Length: 331
Image (tube, rainbow, N blue to C red; front, side, top):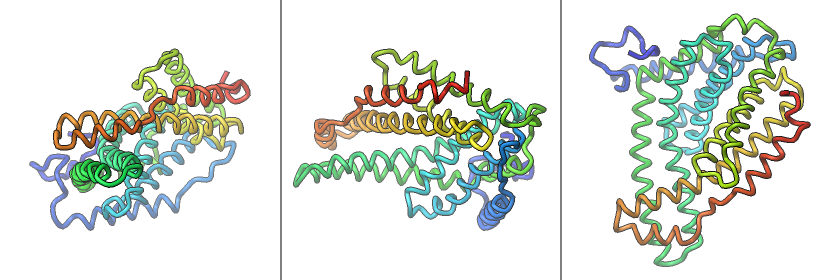
């Protein structure tokens, strides 16, 4: 049984089963109560804040973002709500890992695992939205019969997106999801901290951000002169982790930490656009084999050119990120 499942859950109901009929409104009421409670208790961090206070503020910020978008995700009207919920989940997972030395190990491991579970399901829906946008962009450059052919790909993507969205709604109706949000809510108010968390946050800022910086540098070194797409994807993840860490400790770190986070965000964006192209191309090739009736349309899209060659772009951004004046405080 997951650490996040309530012991009062009726026997025979697995953690991924919808909450029994009649408890749906109760669940939403609980989440809304936590949202209001977190908004009322938000911390205003000062330069002399303790490390544990930074952890609290970070978890509260991520959870609030998730809870504010939860109702819109359930309504299924705005795709942006899914995107924001996914960002919140990814950021929470990254922050939990960044602040792992300040938290109890068992809680970190269990929470990261559950956030990965939630993030994967949100990601399946969001990835579908990104693919639709990519194919639609290619179709906009076509006319007549060619454009109609590509419309078949959009229809297939829409069908898959509906299936993924159905799985997401089922997930949001489980005790496992509710238990995860409640655990995060409790951590936002009174996290399970290590002794290290009692130190001033500014004394640990260099160490916490430095770990993320070192991981990015190692990945960049492995990229070499001809990096593979998986390596660039890993580099994007490292840039995102560094960005989130800089933003989380910004109130207690040197001002240059803000600039470092901005540069990391820029690198994340460039590599993210590259990855979108990689995934679109891979999807079209896979779909062409799965659906012979759409093979011509897929080939048409591929022939229009999907830009995935951004090697010069990311290297320039990385060079700006590695400027001595920006990262010298981590030495």
